[in-house]
Amino acid sequence: MSEQRRPLVTHIYTADPSAHVFDGKIYIYPSHDIEHTGKDSMEGDEYAMEDYHVLSMDSPEADCVDNGEALHMRDVKWVSKQMWAPDLAYSDGAYHLIFPARDKEGIFRIGAAHSDSPVGPFKADDDYIQGTCSIDPCVFVDDDGKVYVYYGGLWGGQLEKWRTGKFDPEGKEPADDEPALTPFCARLNSGCTELVTKPINVRILDENGNDIIKSDEDRRYFEGPWVHKYNGKYYLSYSTGTTHYLVYAISDSPMGPFTYGGRIMEPVLGWTTHHSIVEYEGKWYIFYHDSELSGGKNHLRNVKYTELHYDPDGSIVTIDPYK
Ligand code: FUB
Image (cartoon, rainbow, N blue to C red; front, top):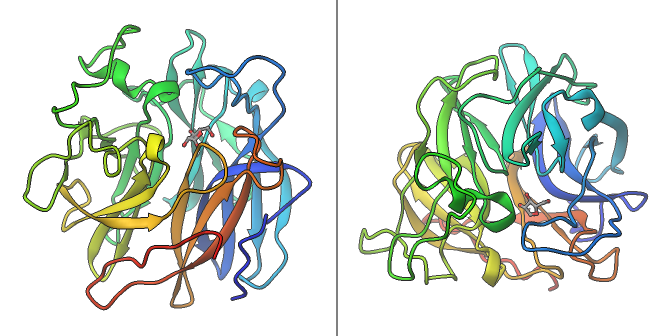
């Protein structure tokens, strides 16, 4: 594979790439960033996305193709605005696009849309998946066919507003010395229409078996979970938000607890970091974004990829995105 590290497409802005391989082809499910004339805010108003396009590549060396609009918010009954970072699962013979957006009350929820084709078009369910909240769903289908969804993001993503189990508009992050918030995890049914277990917050532990605390901003969870399996271990990777790293933690179980393993990528140009990890013909790749194409505008990003390497002990070799 050529070391691309340049925008995969340049005719639209794309971010938050979730990459998957189906029938020898790479499919990328990104957010579709658009211009926004309002003010930036802590709630992420500038991330005003309205639809999804599916990108694909016949192989890592091939050009990246935009397969056009796969789902627009006008066709999703429960959505009011902001269709953020999606993922896709193949399960039960169909392709399921799992995506977050604000509902009619302005609360982020996670919905599903389905297709016979990996590039859509996708038909959305009438309502969001009951029991879900927040943003950044990652759907992991284990070798036994069980489907897991991980989700949650701080600040704009509202994760801190769900600490009591109900939406609290005044909800805050924990104190500095308390365990940091972590993503929710639940099992989905094979048709990806409903949760079949109660969501739990996965635990992310340090080297001494203690929960990573809120003030440990180099390692604590912020948003953008991704789960992949390597040599029988489950890797949960995520963004640290305020410190702009992509990091990972490892477990023997898909629901954790996960133990912090290290840093995957140093900060990119732009505030957000969001990625996915996928295997293609025995090599591993990380898809991620930065804001190169827009000259550094945080909300106008572009998807890139590069190869990912493991050390013999299973640790991931840290990537400097600009070297
Ligand atoms: O794209 C909107 C938000 O920015 C995503 O949900 C986060 O992960 C961050 O990339």
